[in-house]
Length: 504
Image 1 (cartoon, rainbow, N blue to C red):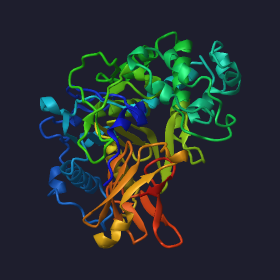
Image 2 (tube, helix red, strand yellow; image 1 turned 135 degrees about the horizontal axis):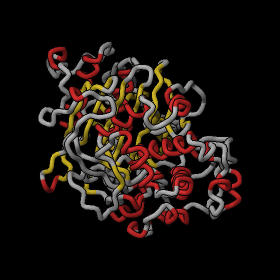
Image 3 (cartoon, rainbow, N blue to C red; image 1 turned 120 degrees about the vertical axis):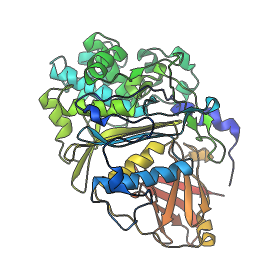
Image 4 (spheres, rainbow, N blue to C red; image 1 turned 90 degrees about the vertical axis):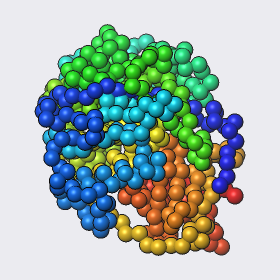
C-alpha cells in the first residue's frame, strides 16, 4: 500500500472540514407519541420488536425483507458488523409514521475523554442542512414575500455581480440549475476560518467566478448557490439566517437540540470529527471544527440529532412548516430528469418516492430520507467519513425491494491485479482529489474513497463488484490492449460515476 506525503494533509482538501457536534436527552415531539421515546440504556425503541426479531444473526442474503421486523433485523446485523470493523460511529433512527422502529448509538463522541455517543449527541449535518435553507425559502414564497421566479437582482439589488444577478432566479438556485459552482476552493483554504462570521464574508471566494453554464440549461451541485439563498433569506426576512431558521423551523418543529454554533462555543455532548481523509491506512485523526463560520446556509455549521430530524420530518408531513401548496411540492413529487427540486433531493426507486438530503465533509456524514408514500423516516448521523451513507443506502435498498446480489468466489491472488492507487482527473500529474486506494482482504476489495470511508466490494464476477453494505453501488475496471488494469469506474456512491486511472 502506498502512503501519500503527510505534507499534503492541509492542502488537499481542508476544504471539506466542518465540525460535528453534541447531544442531550431525547423526548419525542411533533406528533410522535411519547411511547416512541428512545431508551438510552439499550439504544432501541420500546416498540416490542424483540420477540419478532429473534437472534442477531444476519438474514440470509438471498432473502428480500418483506416486513419491518426483517428490515430491522438486517439493520441490526449491518451495524454490528460495521461497528466491529470500526467503520461506523454515530446514531441511527428508523421510524414509521413517526414511531421509532429502531434506534441505536455507537462509538465515541470524544475518544480522549471516553465520552460515548448517545441518542442525544449532536452532529454537524454538513449538506443535509440545505433542507433548512430550502424550507425557509419556500416559507417566504408561501407568505408572498418572494417569488421563486424572482431574479437575484430583484431580491438582492446590491449583489456584487449584477450580470449574474440579472440571469439567475431563486428557483434555479434551489434546483441547482443556476450554473453557479462552489465556494470551497484554495482561496477559502488559505483563509483563517475564524475570520468568516457572515454569509457576506464568503462571497469573495466565488462571486466573480463565471457561470459553468447558462442558467436553466443543466443541473450541477452548487454550494455557492445555497450560500446566496441564505443571503436572500436575510434580506427578505430582516433576520440573520441562523435566527430565522431557529424561530421559523427549529422552534415550530420542536427541534430543541438543534442550532448553529461557532467554533468557540462550548457545547456539551459534542461529537468530534474523526477522519481518515488524508491517510486511509493510518488512525483516524480529529478534524478541525469550523462551526457557524462554515456558512450554514451552504451546508455547514448546523448541528442536530437524529431525534430532531424525525421531528423535522413530522413537521413537514403535518404542514407545520409550509403551506399545503409548498408541502405538496416536496411530498407529491413525480418523476422527472431533475434530481434536486426545491432544494430537496428527489428520486423514485422501484416506484417508491424518496426525498431528503445527505451530507458529507471531513469527519462527518449524514443521511436523511423520507418515504412519503410509505411513511418511513431514516436519520443517520456519524462522526466518521461517509459512514452514514453505508447505513442510509442499505436501508433504502431494503425499503425499495432491491434484491441482494450474490457474490462469487474469486481467489485473492486474482484480485491482487486490482489493488493499488487510483487518481481522478488531475492534468499535469496533480490529482484533483485525494487518491482512491484498493487493497485485497479475504476475497473482497476494500476501497478507500475520499470523504466516503472504506467500502467492501465483493465480486459478482472477475469483472464486476458490488458494495457488500450499500448493495447497489458497482465497481468495474478498464484494461489496456494487453489486459492490464488501467482504471476504475465506480457508480452508486457519488451522484455521478467516479472514473480514476491506476498509478504505479
